[in-house]
Length: 409
Ligand SMILES: Cc1cc2nc3c(=O)[nH]c(=O)nc-3n(C[C@H](O)[C@H](O)[C@H](O)COP(=O)(O)OP(=O)(O)OC[C@H]3O[C@@H](n4cnc5c(N)ncnc54)[C@H](O)[C@@H]3O)c2cc1C
Image 1 (cartoon, rainbow, N blue to C red):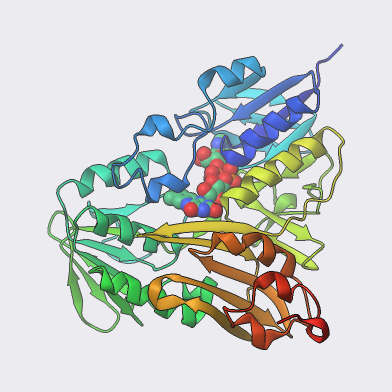
Image 2: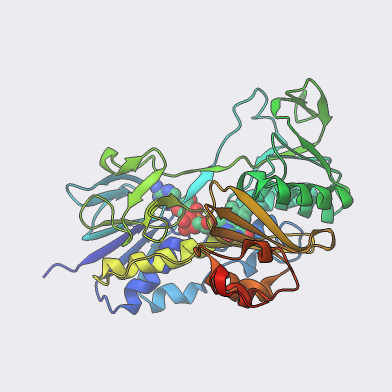
């Protein structure tokens, strides 16, 4: 009798979590895990933080010990790119071999968006996604180069903070304020000030139009005609989901579409993690997230779904970011919002920003306020909050869990 096979393309956090869940569900067939990087699945968050600053070594980033894979009978194929998937025949091509599968998970993650300007192939221009990228960058920071962080999203801001922490001169630039796209101008302004106070030059309203240098990077030309002298640039302008190997029936403009059970439109093909654009009943729409916790939990949900355990995957989204001594935690999703209410002491690096749309709390960004996380998770999605009290730090958050009419002061 043929042995059933679950195949997973992408040996990142989502792929690993799925493999683990498949075994936890008691699946006794083959579990194949394909990854095109050399290392076994590892954590990416330290790559822009502790690892980049030289505070932890690469032996601290693996998600599981090597023995885990044999113990769980997970057949890992590292350094193996899946070149093609045929969902009609249920086969995939990897390392010149053809594999058949019964259930397939796409967990191919995402790759940094490239900056299409002249000079972007000069030595000294970096991107950061992999352990290899981070190792090269960390080594380059040893000579304390003048660093230009291009893009002030989470990765760019974390790189700027880490480069500054190891003693580099740093310029952080973007069209908008630090993390403004996700967190709005109010929080962007607070972070801009925080970076400036720690010696980073924050430039907003400009983009890089050219990298210049004779044999390696020497300066960047900006859209306002000025230049920034730099020895090293790190481009962090977002990521695009890795869909190039996928058949057209699975592609959308933004990742692989799934329902809330991680199922794609094609029978027995699932997707999870950064590549998946999934339906979220609590939001009433589909979204693609690029967060560690999402990759882990959705990978687990997908693994269970591959074994027939269909529970809707719909937690409150969560991510974090560390910059300097600012520990940021974000719950919910606010893509557009009507207003932001701030609570706490932004000047002292301890505050919460609440994102409201039609009086409904869509999301909250907590900075050095993890103690409020449980109360805030209960408030997310609620309407009829006493909004005027959200900003009042003297009113305990737990007292706002009731409707406006019955708020206790
Ligand atoms: C530097 C950095 C810092 C981060 N910090 C934070 C943080 O502080 N907080 C937070 O919440 N999130 C953070 N994230 C995001 C988080 O790490 C990602 O959301 C998570 O790693 C996504 O996991 P994934 O398994 O979906 O994808 P990935 O981790 O990208 O894994 C997918 C894997 O599949 C491989 N692959 C792709 N195509 C193929 C193919 N055809 N064949 C074989 N293999 C293939 C890829 O090379 C990759 O190894 C950070 C990310 C980075 C890069």
